[in-house]
Image 1: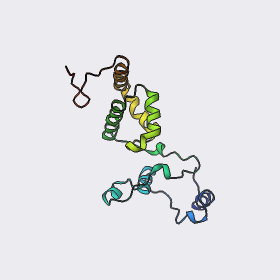
Image 2: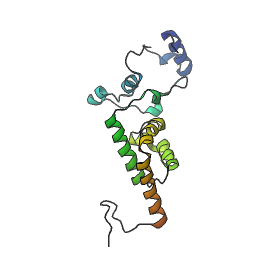
Image 3: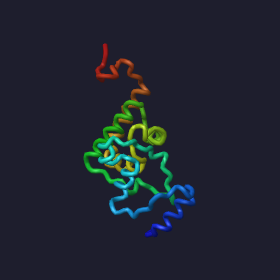
Image 4: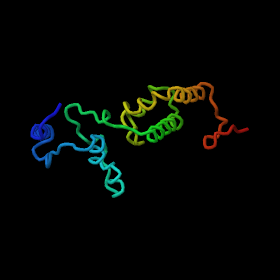
Length: 156
């Protein structure tokens, strides 16, 4: 709902203390761009080699959910899908529950967004993801110690 800058300033002071507010500004750009700017993950901040702030250290007020505002282009979605497939393969994740737990615990270490965003990308590729999970499951069940982990070739 629309709110005034004064009401936002007051809520921040209540949650974080009197010295927490230097400036309250109405978002003119997209919410995602503003969030990337504040965490120093924007293209400009990366180009200037600014310190990147951890998203886990940011206090979100009033159940704010940044994942609602993240939009990905086709290339970003493809990159994320490849990253998820690599995580499944590298960490031997055999199903969606294991992937979900892994992302909750280590997703930020691998630059992954929240699970809502990951789910939205995976939703269109369930067949491929299922093949990756099945491959990990088969290796667990039947064991394939004769495969070179680096090349994928079967060793004699």
